[in-house]
Amino acid sequence: MSANDPLSQVEFDSIYSKVPRLTVEIVVKNPGGRIYLTQRAIQPCERQWHLPGGTVRFGEPLTDAIKRIAERELGIIVKQTENIGYIEYPSHYLHGLDSPVGIVFVITEYSGAFNINQEAKNSGWFTKLPKPMHADQDKFLIDKNILHN
Image 1: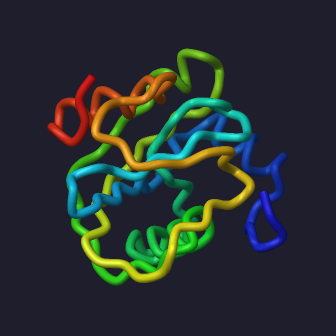
Image 2 (image 1 turned 90 degrees about the vertical axis):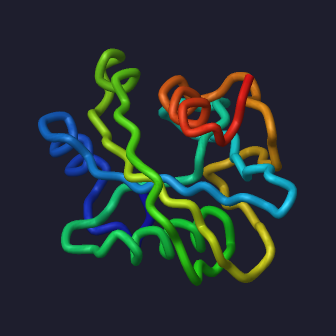
């Protein structure tokens, strides 16, 4: 959590241990059909490759959340998006974490150069699922024919 977050870590953990957490997940494709993934440097899911994303704040429009998260995590300015579905995260609540539901958006137009923040230790463009990939996002990416094994 940063100084700009509306909840302390204690408040966040308390609330989301009791109710589902709405998130947005970001798919960025390049002209060659590769997608951009980051490798988490923090818990939960440390060291796993995943779609960049994060929690939607109370009253925040989804498009604003996408813009905020893309700029914070990737350093890019989002200009246009398209919703492509949702991801449920049973791996989280089955392991005693929270219960997120992620609405997934493809960023169809953006500006700027990628510059990941401290939440990621690595990043790259992929046509195949890297290992270890987040357990619930891998199924979504395969089912939507975005990446394959």
